[in-house]
Image 1: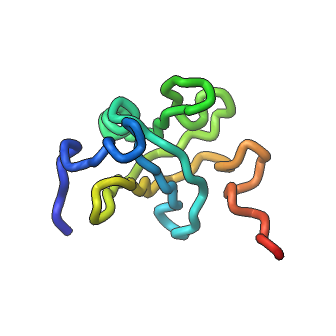
Image 2: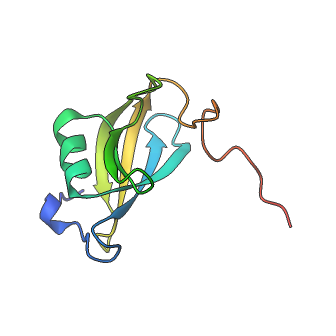
Length: 110
């Protein structure tokens, strides 16, 4: 697998943000989806903890800063277009604010 520097990430399509999919590094279960700006991505790569940009609070936040459910980032990958990122993590508790392991705990029906 080839590597891409952070300059290869395209933050221009969503006004400075990219979509981040968070996946358990062992089970491959999708845990959550959030957004990151350049600062969040740089901090994640430096600290190896999942950081995001809160659109509602308009600020940088680390997953687990209040709950303690921190996510250790094992690897970060960027998609072929450079506009989405995948964090492969070791979660330290549930990903969802509801207490569920994943944010995708509800089936969608008609």
